[in-house]
Image (cartoon, rainbow, N blue to C red; front, side, top):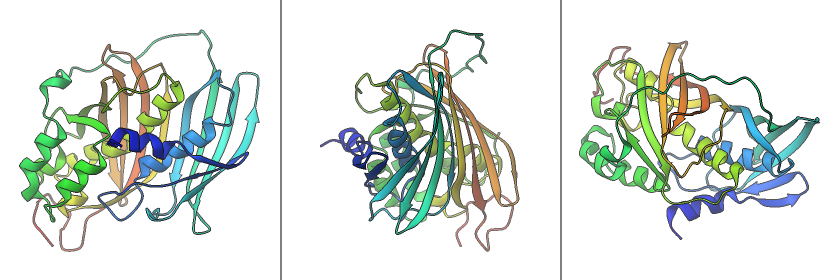
Length: 300
């Protein structure tokens, strides 16, 4: 089973009861469940209780506790509303008797209406950019534990993700504009199920969104040992059809960091320039003791 097949298997939740599902986790580079996995699984669970003619148009979620990758996650569905045009579901993810994640998702039947969008920003062709397998090993000396390179490559093998400019870990100690761009697509073709593509984009959306916060402060990230962070909440709006197995540009910025938290916001465009998704996330962004508030790649 290749990495993408393994990921798709993770998203194929076991249905325990009519509105109760169970999912497993995959190994990660950190000792907790990857937030994008929980969000994607929760959206799968919600979508399986919604009529097929209604597509996800938004989700709002809170990460409540760190997930245990060694234990199953149970997803319970609350059918908040079934209207003529909109359907709303609430999902709570539970481990060891405690909620670790909460999601509200809304689905809508297709409608014609007003149409406009923000223009796609310039970006180089994705095939001209280095792959993760080419980029990460070049900067292994930037990480507290160089073996994290192999773990990152393993956990991200299902997704071809390419940075337009140097990622935060490559320029730790250098303050840059609070903006980051990546191209991404799944590492293989997907079925034509629209919900599957939405869930895969949700899975990827948690990987790099807070990079723009790190860049503004010259931080390399958790693997560099100069920041401690975790996702707090996450919101997405799905505007137009897209395929997660075709190149998508993830254009990310950070308007603010304060109070030990950083805010990232982003737009995701198809290669043809259609604005497909808007994303906002806030996360805990704490500087380890002894690191101070200024930039610098040193070690504790």
